[in-house]
Amino acid sequence: ETGVTQTPRHLVMGMTNKKSLKCEQHLGHNAMYWYKQSAKKPLELMFVYSLEERVENNSVPSRFSPECPNSSHLFLHLHTLQPEDSALYLCASSHGTSGGLSTDTQYFGPGTRLTVL
Amino acid sequence: AQKITQTQPGMFVQEKEAVTLDCTYDTSDPSYGLFWYKQPSSGEMIFLIYQGSYDQQNATEGRYSLNFQKARKSANLVISASQLGDSAMYFCAMRETTGGSYIPTFGRGTSLIVHP
Image (cartoon, rainbow over all chains, first blue to last red; front, side):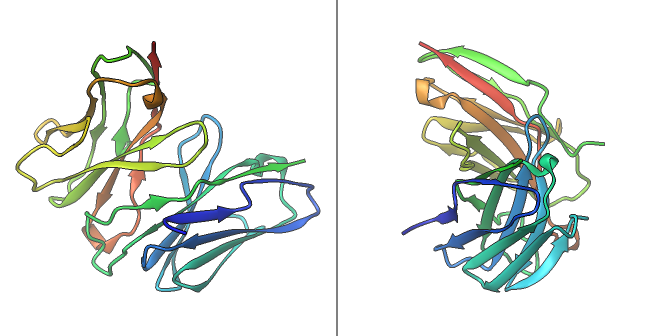
């Protein structure tokens, strides 16, 4: 398996459900990201992890809870979501350095299409 | 103010012709990187090309080239010999280095449709 993988690819859940999105990268990267992409809205950064430590949390509601157990895996735990949370959730990874080099390219997974009923 | 501006919400091009997708950016950081991504309807964001602010030459990757005009703060993507499979959303992004930020900024994207 190469690149960045995400599971599941599609998810339909009710507002009272609890589910988790999984992201795995096989690129030896140190930084991982969660993005939300809603229809007709810009890409929204949700969380950034570097070496398993959260370095950015972009005012995301607490019903989204990230987890990064190691540098290859990233989870997004979902609970009591709202219909407006329906979107494409994209995971990305990059080499990541403490200096934030401008050359640090992100590589994305295929995304999880989430529908909240 | 937006850091990345893509003024063309939609573009159409005939197969085998070249097309230019516009991107302008705003930064006071002397060191930054510019990226273009392609997003087909399947959803995956595919990295296409990178240009560094100190690079003397325009970046090229196969049929993709970046028309980098630093003084104008523009980084337009040129796709030569368009193919039907080029139909997708295209996003311009910038990563600055001030403060060691990990956060790149993305534009709103341009939808490209290639006609046979």
